[in-house]
Length: 248
Image (cartoon, rainbow, N blue to C red; front, side, top):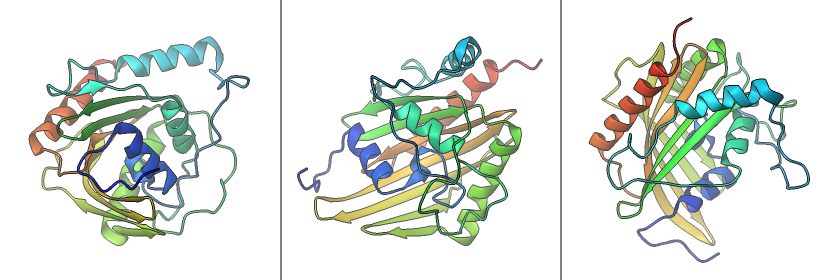
């Protein structure tokens, strides 16, 4: 890999850096002991378990609630990245409640990840070098709420996380409306300095708990994402989740 010191960024680079450096906040979880590392990716000979017809129906409902190109600001184009769904599902499935979110992360997975249905949507604005990221998971209400409160704890007690060659800084955003049942918005800055990678990424994310769903949505780029784009994306994502999750 060449040295990434330029002003542009590709979607694969964002996730390669975030996953490889353990910056799990990018995909909706605080960088903490409550999130176990993702499981190995499925191969062609060993496909991921879809959980039968019931699991397929649940996954279909989640995907229906995701943002589409019509819902995001002009210029953002849908992206297809293999295994992102599987990676995110494994991370959310490894989430554990009643764990100090500021404790050092485990060196190995803590037990087998739970089977959590999830879906993701990714959109790239090539000119702005910004990615819209949305992740929706049927975690159950307790875990969904706990993810929000854990993020609040991280902001209050351990907003700076250092790993070899990288520093993640998190801060509260002024725009923090009440979304869903519980929510919080977060600003993020990733400084990466390694032999073959040197760059800074900035993000604005919203963590939302709604009924039995956990929604993480926001923008990540090499420059500060637009407040207007962020607000429009978050509002559209929450509205679509609510409309596609009828009260029984």
